[in-house]
Image 1 (cartoon, rainbow, N blue to C red):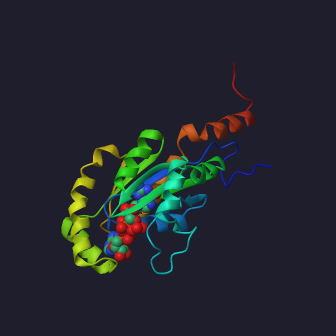
Image 2: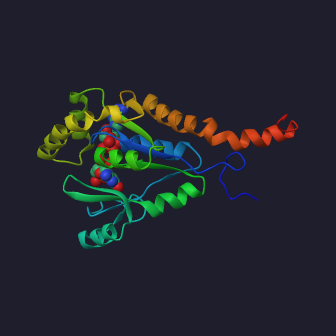
Image 3: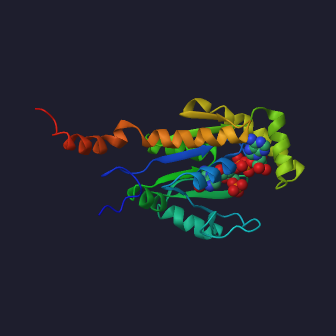
Length: 217
Ligand code: ADP
Ligand code: 5GP
């Protein structure tokens, strides 16, 4: 019996879905929704040197490690990419995501723009999604209302957003996160459409063709 998740027979590896964009754009809201709404998809749990916030637990939102532990992992080649973001180190675990992809799971990454660029170069098949707020003023308002950062940090994040947005041509998809419900549906649709690509479904097509007597050659 296949140990693949709910997919056509002999489906290949899952898809790597990169969700990126400026702080406050809505990456976390959209990835959380997709993880709850879709089957066969897991979150890429990154390593970070920042401290847990609120109810965050190690192994769920992040693997929380010291700077020394992070550097040892980095030097051992554990990370597909790593970056310093807002003064803390963050790294994507290659082993973690590859184990899931091999099981046929899609893996969704919530990472910054630098990391997205590196992964897209190393794994050109990855699906890169840029999330943007509808405007500068809306982004500032959301960062304020989120209540995680003080005014100085918010201004710093807004300042970085311009540079981050300038990378937009490197992405495969753009979601303008104005209406949250619509943006959630758009991310779900991107993930579902990738699963239906002929490349990913050709084994299913071949096995259905068998029921019809196979290829006439
Ligand atoms: P990111 O993960 O990109 O930093 P979040 O998902 O934390 O951003 O979103 C930033 C804040 O904006 C959160 O408080 C979130 O609830 C809110 N938010 C996200 N999308 C929308 C939206 N479309 N309309 C209104 N508020 C939103
Ligand atoms: P936070 O500390 O608010 O959870 O995340 C801060 C930023 O780090 C966000 O933009 C998030 O997307 C990014 N981030 C989280 N994990 C990784 C990672 O593994 N690599 C990179 N490059 N960025 C990450």
